[in-house]
Length: 341
Image 1 (cartoon, helix red, strand yellow):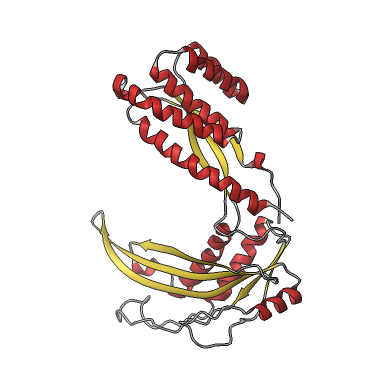
Image 2 (image 1 turned 60 degrees about the vertical axis):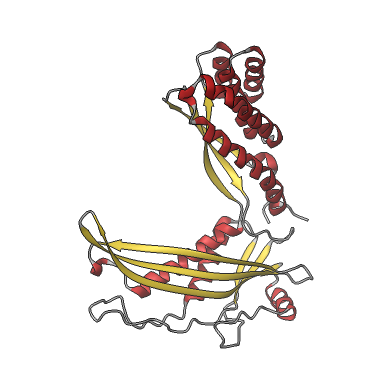
């Protein structure tokens, strides 16, 4: 499993100026967010396994004139989904190797019952393919529906496909199995029904996209988020922004703290606290970022009383506060997901 250190959890991107009632400078951060699945430390080689039963045919004839209606047999959902998952995991290079077992491991014919792999089978597969963990697709259900709706005085035709999947992560030792369930939805819309894809083609695409989406959920991912700095035309605040442009965060923080201590203006105190919180977040110091974000919120009642025009900023700072609270928990989880024994 590829290892990254905590200092690589945030990337600082280009700054973009924005004009509004209060001068602000926007920036985009690339934040490393945790995966929905946490593999055990030391997992470097994985095997993708099909352990599902083929979905029985439950398509119903809707209209004799609808080429997309009627009975359709599609028994390759698991194959396309798993092949896409393997390809996507390989492309991300998170694991050393990603292999795929060619045959389904489920020998039952009961589609509505999940039959998890037993420990003996897991151990045998891990030994056979020389892997540290199995990613097992235990159930897959694809439902499609055609519909019509009006948009701008035009009748639009839609084809919607929903793919439900149930997965389990197994280890050759006594480590507990992880179970996950996902739902992915895809839509195609055209003014003419003949321009919609055939259901078979759409189902293939939906299964391929589902596999790719599941891969995204299994590996920590980079996510872009916007942050803003207040840039009022006050000497200390302007000097701090000069430091921001050169990414001298400690200097900027020092100047904002000086402005915070020196100013009797609650709006300046609020803005400086906000800026300090963002700078600490960029430095990876979430505890101090949380502290100064909370301080900004405490100043806000005074800001709203004296500066009504800036009242919309309270929603942004409250959302930021909630994010930082969640971020503190995420960092510990990311460290576990990126660690090795």
